[in-house]
Length: 424
Image (cartoon, rainbow, N blue to C red; front, side):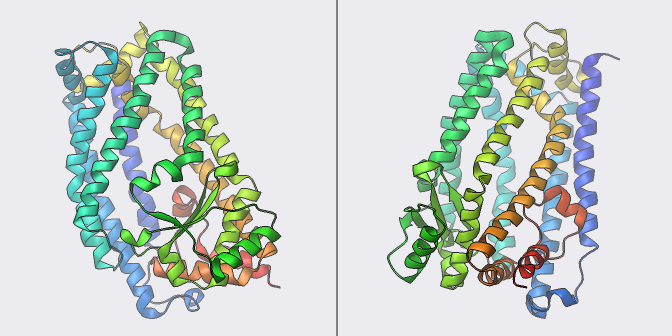
């Protein structure tokens, strides 16, 4: 059996493993569903709201099953007939320029993926989210979001891809180090300027108007020794009734962003509690920690990738050849085929690293909650978390295994228990 064939079977095994792992975890999660309101939730949900949250979870799981199953079938079919290698052959009829070939290759795949996923996106927003009272997206907003997203992908994604391929073609074995530097710079730049450059393309942001809320936020910020001048409100209600708040930027560019839906549904004290939590992330240096760990993870991935796509390597040639499926088409080594195959083969390690990142994220959420409780009050944050969970129809009793694999935040009941201890 050739190395290319081994790679091909590994790719199939990984795709099936990912699919069935997700199904198994969803099954475990469903065993915790119960139409009767559990006692531990009586102070959070009423029976009607709880039943609605359970129905929402069931609909989301059914929808996810359909999407994932169709995606898997399509991917397996494409791999078996050598669809990716056939596309590569077709592109080579027009150009052998590595940058242009990659543009066309990923551009065609991205366009086809967008077209095929469009009905599911429409169903998710205009049927599923609409049914449970969340959707506020208009057809015009939906279309504009897709067009703007596509434009950003072409400009930013295409520009990065061109630069990375240029580095690959020019530097050989030093490819991974220089690419790591470029991507790290881009990550830091995006962290600093995301709210200034990207968000305005999709949402309106305006400074929080003077009044009791801004006064309360500024008073707490001064007490916490947190120099915060940029407090913004974003029109989240433009797309959904779900509420959120987030912290972005570094240094002078840091800002707190509140969804208008959050402001409408919470008291001033609750909002300050939420803001205290976000400030806790900054004070505990979680933002910097996340950036550094993401950079390390990217460097590890690129280092491993460098062994899989070395020029004139039989190993790299076999990796590209693995995408020819059962038809054994002759395939030339190329960056775009190599990185596609590697992306699938790398997914088990990515899963493990993702578990570690989720564990760390959950730990950081507890720390930010603790900061808010110690430096403000635990009760307002407790009430805010309850309202957010109820209004978003969150699953408050997820299976521990499901939490371990997928949750970046601890389940609500565990967060509330930790905050309640601070009141004693």
